[in-house]
Length: 208
Ligand code: FES
Image (tube, rainbow, N blue to C red):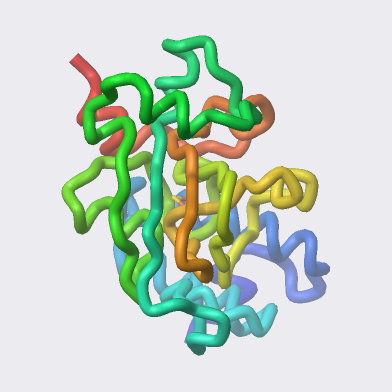
């Protein structure tokens, strides 16, 4: 059996920070969406779990503590803010969005069922939201939570100052409040750019 250190390509005496860095790098290299394979990607996740005790294999919370049956999420596309000259921290952001006639891809509501991540729920309702690794190791799927809360079982990328500003990952973020308001597609916010992987289907869908 290959040792977790070999899988993550680190020395056996690597410290926590080195394990974390190596995990992020290996997730990028082995994710199926980035040219890797499912078995390689799972091997990397298992290695990380073995070394840290953190279960990242499905990214879903182990229990439903604090979860509601369903959450109603109102969403807004960050690109709309640019187009209208609105700011991320506008108090009436969603009221402004309601007052103008935005297409459903940019503004609306949907229900998130238990065990659906926010990204999964958006995709299951036919929306195309940005993502890359789906493993908690990039910022492509980041959303800004303006109301309510998303629980993230795995986060190896967002620093505490971003968490304090309400930035969360939608690929493994699970609503724990009955209602939420989120701005999605915020990957171009300052400092998030550096944490991104190469563009994935969201950009492909909107190019041309
Ligand atoms: S898509 Fe990479 S952390 Fe969500």
